[in-house]
Amino acid sequence: MAQQKKARKVGRPKLPKGEAMGRIVPVRFTADALKAMESAAAAKKLSLSEWIRSTCNAAI
Image (tube, rainbow, N blue to C red; front, top):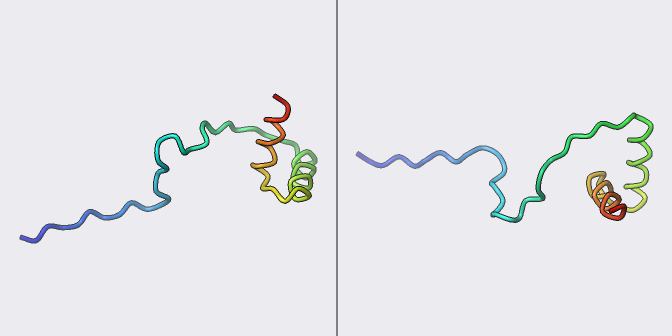
């Protein structure tokens, strides 16, 4: 009998150990706050996540 190959998993492959950002923290914002943050992120040519991380890092 011929050996069957394992099926590849669907989705993004796991990152090597230590490469992942860390924990995901769910946060809710009002619609107005979210619009303001999206505008500020766009002005700096950052994604919303990058802008939130950089703003939080600057605050701490």
